[in-house]
Image 1: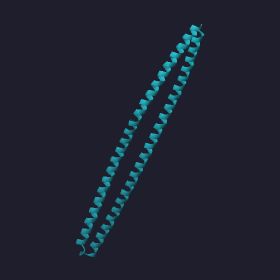
Image 2 (image 1 turned 60 degrees about the vertical axis):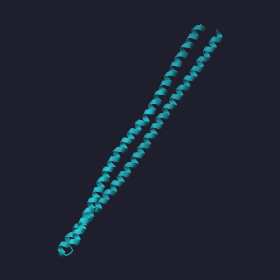
Image 3 (image 1 turned 90 degrees about the vertical axis):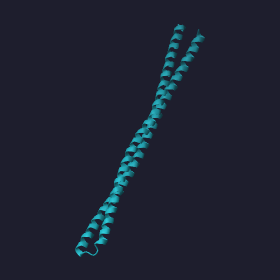
Image 4 (image 1 turned 135 degrees about the vertical axis):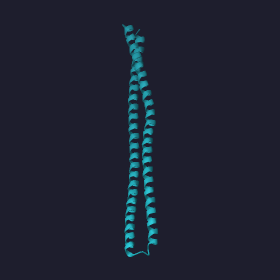
Length: 174
Protein backbone atom coordinates (compact mmCIF):
# COMPACT_ATOMS: atom_id res chain seq x y z
CA UNK A 1 0.00 0.00 0.00
CA UNK A 2 2.87 2.39 0.79
CA UNK A 3 4.45 1.42 -2.51
CA UNK A 4 1.23 2.23 -4.30
CA UNK A 5 1.01 5.60 -2.51
CA UNK A 6 4.66 6.22 -3.40
CA UNK A 7 3.91 5.55 -7.08
CA UNK A 8 0.93 7.89 -6.97
CA UNK A 9 2.99 10.61 -5.34
CA UNK A 10 5.74 10.10 -7.91
CA UNK A 11 3.20 10.27 -10.72
CA UNK A 12 1.69 13.46 -9.23
CA UNK A 13 5.18 14.95 -8.90
CA UNK A 14 5.89 14.16 -12.55
CA UNK A 15 2.63 15.84 -13.54
CA UNK A 16 3.48 18.89 -11.41
CA UNK A 17 6.92 19.12 -13.02
CA UNK A 18 5.31 18.86 -16.46
CA UNK A 19 2.87 21.67 -15.55
CA UNK A 20 5.77 23.75 -14.28
CA UNK A 21 7.55 23.26 -17.63
CA UNK A 22 4.36 24.23 -19.47
CA UNK A 23 4.06 27.34 -17.30
CA UNK A 24 7.67 28.23 -18.07
CA UNK A 25 6.95 27.80 -21.78
CA UNK A 26 3.99 30.15 -21.41
CA UNK A 27 6.18 32.69 -19.61
CA UNK A 28 8.81 32.39 -22.36
CA UNK A 29 6.15 32.78 -25.08
CA UNK A 30 4.70 35.85 -23.36
CA UNK A 31 8.15 37.38 -23.11
CA UNK A 32 8.71 36.72 -26.82
CA UNK A 33 5.33 38.25 -27.64
CA UNK A 34 6.14 41.24 -25.48
CA UNK A 35 9.40 41.69 -27.35
CA UNK A 36 7.43 41.65 -30.63
CA UNK A 37 4.79 44.15 -29.46
CA UNK A 38 7.27 47.02 -29.04
CA UNK A 39 8.69 46.93 -32.60
CA UNK A 40 5.22 46.35 -34.07
CA UNK A 41 3.86 49.34 -32.14
CA UNK A 42 6.84 51.40 -33.25
CA UNK A 43 6.21 50.41 -36.88
CA UNK A 44 2.57 51.49 -36.65
CA UNK A 45 3.50 54.75 -34.95
CA UNK A 46 6.25 55.40 -37.51
CA UNK A 47 3.88 54.71 -40.41
CA UNK A 48 1.22 57.03 -38.97
CA UNK A 49 3.81 59.71 -38.27
CA UNK A 50 5.21 59.35 -41.80
CA UNK A 51 1.72 59.59 -43.33
CA UNK A 52 0.86 62.69 -41.33
CA UNK A 53 4.28 64.18 -42.00
CA UNK A 54 3.74 63.75 -45.74
CA UNK A 55 0.29 65.29 -45.46
CA UNK A 56 1.70 68.20 -43.45
CA UNK A 57 4.47 68.68 -46.02
CA UNK A 58 1.91 68.71 -48.84
CA UNK A 59 -0.21 71.27 -47.00
CA UNK A 60 2.88 73.37 -46.26
CA UNK A 61 3.86 73.29 -49.95
CA UNK A 62 0.35 74.34 -50.95
CA UNK A 63 0.39 77.13 -48.40
CA UNK A 64 3.78 78.34 -49.57
CA UNK A 65 2.63 78.21 -53.19
CA UNK A 66 -0.51 80.15 -52.37
CA UNK A 67 1.50 82.73 -50.44
CA UNK A 68 3.98 83.05 -53.30
CA UNK A 69 1.11 83.45 -55.75
CA UNK A 70 -0.48 86.09 -53.56
CA UNK A 71 2.82 87.95 -53.15
CA UNK A 72 3.43 87.89 -56.91
CA UNK A 73 -0.11 89.05 -57.58
CA UNK A 74 0.18 91.93 -55.09
CA UNK A 75 3.57 92.88 -56.47
CA UNK A 76 2.30 92.85 -60.06
CA UNK A 77 -0.74 94.88 -59.09
CA UNK A 78 1.38 97.50 -57.33
CA UNK A 79 3.68 97.88 -60.33
CA UNK A 80 0.64 98.23 -62.60
CA UNK A 81 -0.70 100.92 -60.26
CA UNK A 82 2.46 102.98 -60.50
CA UNK A 83 2.40 102.72 -64.32
CA UNK A 84 -1.29 103.69 -64.52
CA UNK A 85 -1.25 106.72 -62.17
CA UNK A 86 -1.64 109.10 -65.04
CA UNK A 87 -4.76 107.44 -66.44
CA UNK A 88 -8.26 108.60 -65.88
CA UNK A 89 -10.11 108.49 -62.58
CA UNK A 90 -12.37 105.66 -63.70
CA UNK A 91 -9.38 103.41 -64.43
CA UNK A 92 -7.92 104.25 -61.00
CA UNK A 93 -11.12 103.11 -59.31
CA UNK A 94 -10.98 99.80 -61.19
CA UNK A 95 -7.41 99.21 -60.03
CA UNK A 96 -8.28 100.02 -56.42
CA UNK A 97 -11.11 97.55 -56.66
CA UNK A 98 -8.71 94.88 -57.94
CA UNK A 99 -6.29 95.61 -55.10
CA UNK A 100 -9.06 95.26 -52.54
CA UNK A 101 -10.05 91.91 -54.02
CA UNK A 102 -6.46 90.67 -54.01
CA UNK A 103 -5.98 91.74 -50.42
CA UNK A 104 -9.13 89.87 -49.46
CA UNK A 105 -7.82 86.78 -51.21
CA UNK A 106 -4.46 87.19 -49.49
CA UNK A 107 -6.21 87.47 -46.12
CA UNK A 108 -8.22 84.34 -46.93
CA UNK A 109 -5.02 82.48 -47.90
CA UNK A 110 -3.36 83.59 -44.67
CA UNK A 111 -6.40 82.48 -42.72
CA UNK A 112 -6.26 79.12 -44.51
CA UNK A 113 -2.57 78.85 -43.66
CA UNK A 114 -3.32 79.62 -40.03
CA UNK A 115 -6.10 77.01 -39.96
CA UNK A 116 -3.84 74.42 -41.59
CA UNK A 117 -1.17 75.08 -38.98
CA UNK A 118 -3.77 74.62 -36.22
CA UNK A 119 -4.95 71.37 -37.79
CA UNK A 120 -1.36 70.16 -38.07
CA UNK A 121 -0.79 70.90 -34.39
CA UNK A 122 -4.02 69.13 -33.46
CA UNK A 123 -2.96 66.07 -35.46
CA UNK A 124 0.45 66.04 -33.79
CA UNK A 125 -1.16 66.30 -30.36
CA UNK A 126 -3.59 63.52 -31.23
CA UNK A 127 -0.71 61.30 -32.36
CA UNK A 128 1.16 61.92 -29.14
CA UNK A 129 -1.95 61.12 -27.11
CA UNK A 130 -2.59 57.92 -29.09
CA UNK A 131 1.03 56.87 -28.72
CA UNK A 132 0.88 57.33 -24.95
CA UNK A 133 -2.39 55.37 -24.76
CA UNK A 134 -0.93 52.49 -26.79
CA UNK A 135 2.18 52.39 -24.63
CA UNK A 136 0.11 52.42 -21.42
CA UNK A 137 -2.15 49.60 -22.65
CA UNK A 138 0.86 47.53 -23.68
CA UNK A 139 2.44 47.99 -20.26
CA UNK A 140 -0.80 46.92 -18.56
CA UNK A 141 -1.04 43.77 -20.68
CA UNK A 142 2.57 42.84 -19.99
CA UNK A 143 2.16 43.38 -16.26
CA UNK A 144 -0.99 41.27 -16.21
CA UNK A 145 0.78 38.43 -18.03
CA UNK A 146 3.70 38.66 -15.61
CA UNK A 147 1.40 38.51 -12.60
CA UNK A 148 -0.46 35.50 -13.99
CA UNK A 149 2.77 33.65 -14.82
CA UNK A 150 4.22 34.46 -11.42
CA UNK A 151 1.10 33.20 -9.63
CA UNK A 152 1.13 29.96 -11.65
CA UNK A 153 4.82 29.44 -10.97
CA UNK A 154 4.29 30.02 -7.25
CA UNK A 155 1.40 27.57 -7.17
CA UNK A 156 3.38 24.91 -9.02
CA UNK A 157 6.36 25.41 -6.72
CA UNK A 158 4.14 24.94 -3.68
CA UNK A 159 2.63 21.80 -5.18
CA UNK A 160 6.10 20.50 -5.93
CA UNK A 161 7.22 21.10 -2.34
CA UNK A 162 4.11 19.39 -1.01
CA UNK A 163 4.67 16.37 -3.23
CA UNK A 164 8.34 16.18 -2.34
CA UNK A 165 7.44 16.28 1.35
CA UNK A 166 4.91 13.49 0.83
CA UNK A 167 7.52 11.44 -1.03
CA UNK A 168 10.01 11.94 1.77
CA UNK A 169 7.35 11.02 4.29
CA UNK A 170 6.45 7.91 2.30
CA UNK A 171 10.13 6.92 2.07
CA UNK A 172 10.47 7.24 5.82
CA UNK A 173 7.33 5.13 6.36
CA UNK A 174 8.79 2.33 4.22
